Image (cartoon, rainbow, N blue to C red; front, side, top):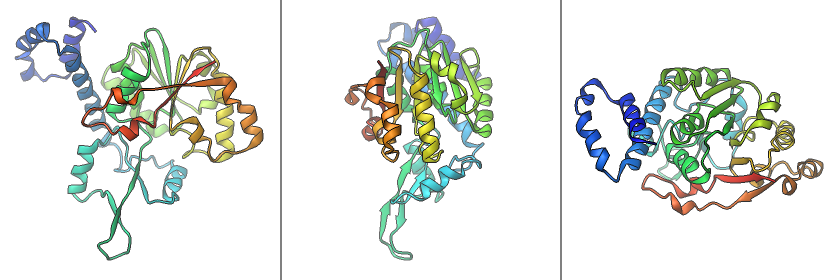
Length: 306
């Protein structure tokens, strides 16, 4: 990003009062070695602003009324688990909610006692640090590339890709009409419509889009939202259509973990993972900032189409 692009991006988030100090800031940036870090921080501010806008439109658990299956599957996990959207709520926000009594990190082992144990948190969205890691360290230069997010939910990947990459087009495919509306609202408000498109559809109806994708991103996309038979259908659809040689697939968790409960011999033989994709090793140590959970980064896996 050049200096003029940086200037325009800064102007988008500064208030009228703050703009009065802009000349001094820009003069400092011209001679500073920290321009890249400054821009990353500025892009994070934009993402945080989007998250704040979305938080007021959703209940605390950030689940749509139509997501009954996901809610049931979360409740059925062997260890007590709650959904906390990592894009909407960073660690600081969770701490504040706990202090206010609106959220808890622990549950009571025996009703009425003081014996407690930590709750498991699950998120169907990337956090802002995870988005930075994804677009700066996991994926290569995306100039001219088409990125598709399967189950784009609140749009975190789309917004992160817009700010952290040069992808020419970012398309989110989302089956929930509630989430499509929220994504569209944010795209329009923040002026992202030149590169972001949100499609209200089941990914299995989007064969041409998947076939043309350079990067496909899937974050907890099938396990919590489909019955096993539908999950197998969805994976077979992806494997049959996402065939562009050298195209990249990002999954959370790993494909192997996602398929753990789908041990159907005919399905696994048809899927033929080893003939379709290969895993690309990632260096998770390159992005360990103070606000980054290393375990969450290790859930991100990259594959290349053979």
